[in-house]
Amino acid sequence: MSYDTIIVGGGAAAYSAAIYAARYNLKTLIVEKDFGGETLLAGVIHNWPGAGKDGIDGFELMKKMKDQAESTGVEIVSGEASLVSMKKHCVKVKVGKKEFVSMTLILCVGMEHRKLGLDHEDDLKGNGVHSCATCDGPLYKGKKVAVVGGGDSAVKSANQLLDMGAAQVYMIVREDNLERAEPANLDELKARKDVTYVYENEIVELKGDKKLSGVVLRVEFEGNKDLEIDGLFVEIGSVPRDDLPKQLGVKFDERGQINVDPYTMATNVDGVFAAGDVTNGAAGFKQIVTASAQGAIAATSAYKDTKEHAGFCTLHVRSNKK
Ligand SMILES: Cc1cc2nc3c(=O)[nH]c(=O)nc-3n(C[C@H](O)[C@H](O)[C@H](O)COP(=O)(O)OP(=O)(O)OC[C@H]3O[C@@H](n4cnc5c(N)ncnc54)[C@H](O)[C@@H]3O)c2cc1C
Image 1 (cartoon, rainbow, N blue to C red):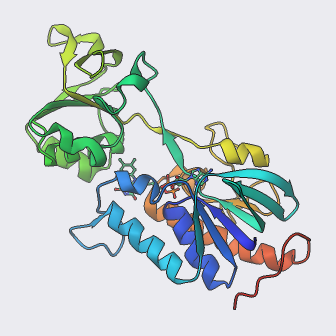
Image 2 (image 1 turned 90 degrees about the vertical axis):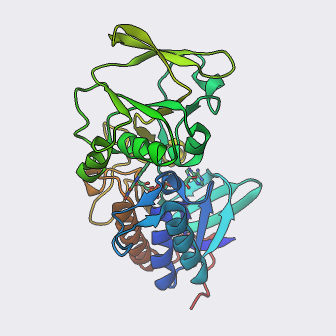
């Protein structure tokens, strides 16, 4: 099957790009591995313009975006996209056994969570070690948990865990402050009493066989390196997903983000654009609103590209979409 643009991703950048692409009458396909992307982990979003003073739940926001994209006639397939072949303005991707051809590609593949890199971390994943407070926080009602990380996601996660009924949250932070967090989220956390701040410290060992029973700290805290907890939420940042971009020959910056022209979201590969958290656009400011804006710009550039290079891709059957 042949498209004017294929959008890879199932988050804010992808849905926004799809809504714009469809309004440019581009025959558009979204390939999404998972619905909703990172926004599903974000809980209530208070900084999405128009959400009102109570904000909007991340799941609900993504559902609305996806529904809007689908209502414009965009096709969606579930699965992981990988590259089959790439010539100028003629890209073939595979999802399972199906192949799809397109004149342009918009990469909205986001980032994946960083791990602590400690022994047994993978074994304890889901058994005391987590990376999503929204998903797994309810398991820790009345229990002691720790959040490791010093950014906004860590602070938001701690607030969520307390909202969900955690009895005590330890914030384990490498730095001596949490000033990288959004001030409103940090103020909310600082106003709570069941939070213990463990600054300038790190986790060096995870304890527990089949289930996490505690962690060992690098530096003693209140006279002890052992900290007994029921659950640990790892919020130490993310790294851009690079499998498909690498297959395409896309160039990255020194932080592993896709290098884009911020005015067009074009990558170094003809006909390939990128948007959202995976890029270094918006000066690396990774939010739903910036991902959505980048998706809109990428779709506009893809539209111009298909007009300029019509006929380049002999595999491409011109769209009948009106
Ligand atoms: C805990 C937390 C709280 C946050 N809170 C806020 C907040 O309050 N406000 C805010 O604005 N932002 C917040 N963010 C950031 C926000 O979620 C991200 O900026 C946003 O999700 C980026 O969207 P994206 O589309 O670029 O990437 P993502 O949302 O990560 O989506 C990437 C998508 O690509 C898919 N994918 C990857 N590879 C492939 C492939 N090969 N084939 C097919 N699909 C693929 C994935 O399955 C996923 O669906 C928060 C993030 C976290 C983790």
